[in-house]
Image (cartoon, rainbow over the protein chains, first blue to last red):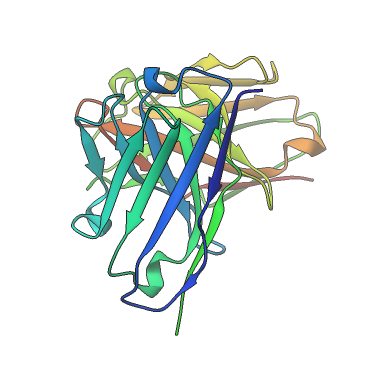
Length: 117
Length: 111
C-alpha cells in the first residue's frame, strides 16, 4: 500500500524544538520531491517546505526560514522537519505530501504540534 | 510572498452547479501556476482532486472539473451531491514551481 505516516507531534514550550518524521512505503521514495504542509486549528492549509529527491534543493515559506529545516533519508524512506525556536503560531497539524514536480497526490494523516506554556 | 484568494463560502443546491475561483495577487493565474484543487472534510487530511489546471486523479468524481476563467483558476462542480460538502483549497506554484501558496479555502455547503 502506498502510504505516508507522520509522527513526532507533541506539546512543546515556546522557544523549544521538535523533530517531525514522515515514513513512506509502497513507492520508490527517492524518485520524488516531498513537502510539509501545516494547518492551524480551524484555519486553512499552509505550505511549509519542500525538498528535492537528493536533498540538494530546499524551499521554505518565509515564516519558518531560519527556524525550520527539511531533510530526508532515502535509505530509510523518511522525511523530516526539524523545528526550532517554536512559536504559538506554529501550532497545528503537520502533513507530509508527495510532490511537487510530480503530481501532489499522496498525503499523510498528519501529526499535531502544540506550542504552549 | 503572493496571496491566493478564494471565496470564503458558497452554497449550492443538490444537483446544482457551482464554480469556485482562485486568484493571485501577482496577476492572472495561468497554466504556469500549475493550479491544484484539494478537498478537505472535517477531521480528514486533504485530498487532491485536480492538478495542472484541469487534470483529474483516478478518484476524482467526473462531476468536478478545473479550468482557467477570467484570469483565475476555477473549479466547477456540476450536479452537486451532499457528500461534496467540504472545504476546497486552491494551490498555486510560484518561482518555477519551487514555492507554493494555498488559498484561504472555500467552505462549500450543499443545501
